Image (tube, helix red, strand yellow):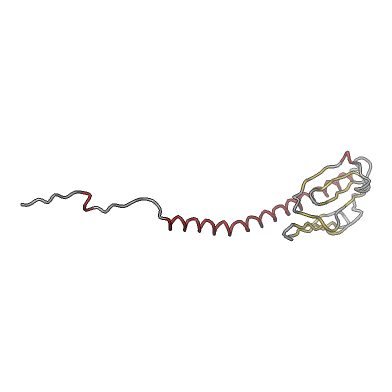
Length: 157
């Protein structure tokens, strides 16, 4: 009987572990494509979120100004002014004639601008707004949120 000398390395194929250049390029291309799709969606979500936060902040400021006017806090009117970058809750008959020591400032994203009825003043005791109308918040991507103030001072958005 003749015995063949068999080595275990001869019968098993040798495999090398690792990634080929083609596999690496495919993974990079896939990640790049997913990032290209996800980034605009994220940015759009971020803009809508900033607008929603600004609308809620303004509505809360308006309600607070109305409550302060109804309570006759400081024996005067109270109001809110929305401008690019901030909202100001103020004490006085107008923003120009306000008592700046009572100002409460709330920051907005600089990418948001306010248009329409940007100054709302509430009369003391009754808390009725001196002006009614619509305040529109506009993002730099032209998305908008609209707040409407009626004659009773109700804010709808």
